[in-house]
Length: 158
Length: 94
Image (tube, rainbow over all chains, first blue to last red; front, side, top):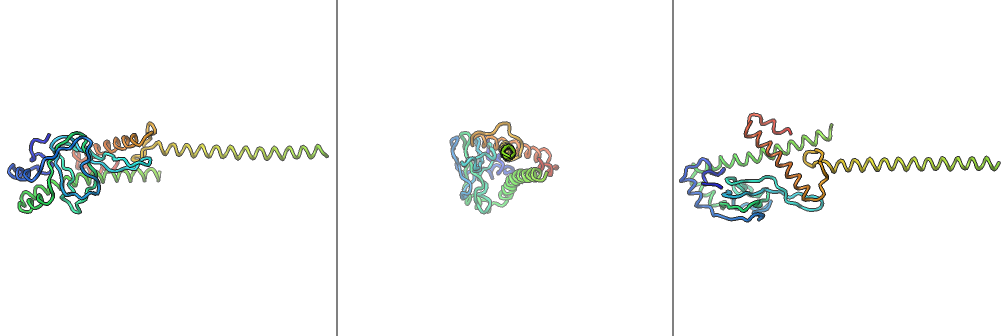
């Protein structure tokens, strides 16, 4: 359970008045276990901070003639979901579903970006945090991909 | 004269028979080898090529196995990134 928005990965390091202001731009949303929050390729108009529960990022995998949603990562309270809303071209790169009943704080892209443009000191901190989130994903996916390439090469040319 | 003809015909038939059975045996061996290779391919993980303990019988079992492998890889990557960021190069090798 996320105690305050200031403890979330995206808004960490902000003074209380700053994250309180941002909190006012969000709306609480309840998601039931098993519910799909969004699908890969959708337009990312809003992003979410998980307040309670867990969400899973998934991707479609073709298995034995069926397409199965396969978990890539499980995210807990404090994590940011659908950060593509803040990064052009604003397209969701994975699908998300709730693995437990969850509560989110959802933010529409435009009001948040306008707020950050008005408050560059806040924008600097938030964009720094966003860079960390995006870089972490990049490192994870890059590591998985490079390992896979290495295995294929080792297997093919042994 | 007839005896020579019968013996020669018997030899000819015997040689044909041996050739037929040899070809059949070789075909059987090739089919078995290909089936073995196919089975071996199906019994390896699509992600890491490790041998799977059991052939997954359903798509749900395949998804479970893939998710388990991804979880393990991501745990390893996250550990390397957070505990030893100076060894970033290491995470790219399984």
